[in-house]
Length: 262
Image 1 (cartoon, rainbow, N blue to C red):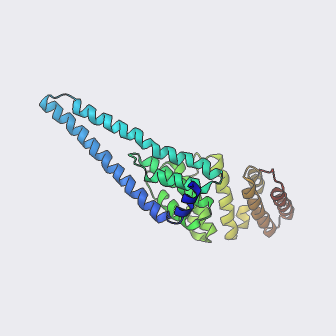
Image 2: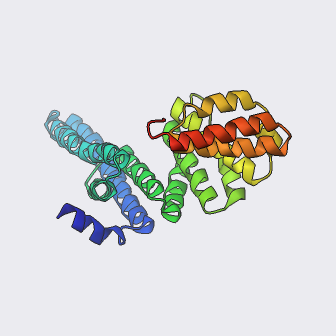
Image 3: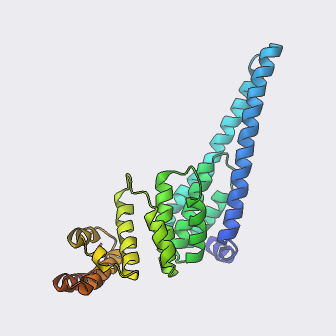
């Protein structure tokens, strides 16, 4: 029943509809936060003037705390969807993310995590157009958590390359902040950069540190490692490093044939 409902609604939950929902919910959360803050400040002033104490302020503070606690539900749904995406249960993940983006929340960060997870879902589904639109919204936001900004730019660059928008992908790759980058994003960035360099004929750049790049590909997931090694092999052939080209081409083929590799 859940899967049928997900399939029936998947085409209607486009990037545009998700962004409209995200913007409406975050705007509502902002104005409600602002209104509660103003009311709490006013209740303190009124209490001081009328000597009525802090009862109105305390009541508003309790209400705000309760709303904040309830707001964590949207964030929990967004975080939990990651497991479904990794397991390839895309329909269930979409239902969970739709619920996350629809749910009431005072916390903008919860909605942003939901939007990022939806972008991850669309990227995993190879729905490149939706992934690009969602990621562009994420990278345009300030301030944004650096890790969210970096992962969103990586997804954006990868999706742009899939759509053969090479120049735009190069701009996004150059804009990626590598400070405090984790291993997962570092490997992904290497794969995306080599893909872009290969498409733009930068074979010498790909081979400038071929030994280190090759070692790093061994840490990548199998499909990513095989593709990246193939691209490095092609670059090595173009610049005359034929031993590297032969080795990497063979290694790439072995990776794809080994069912337990990676």
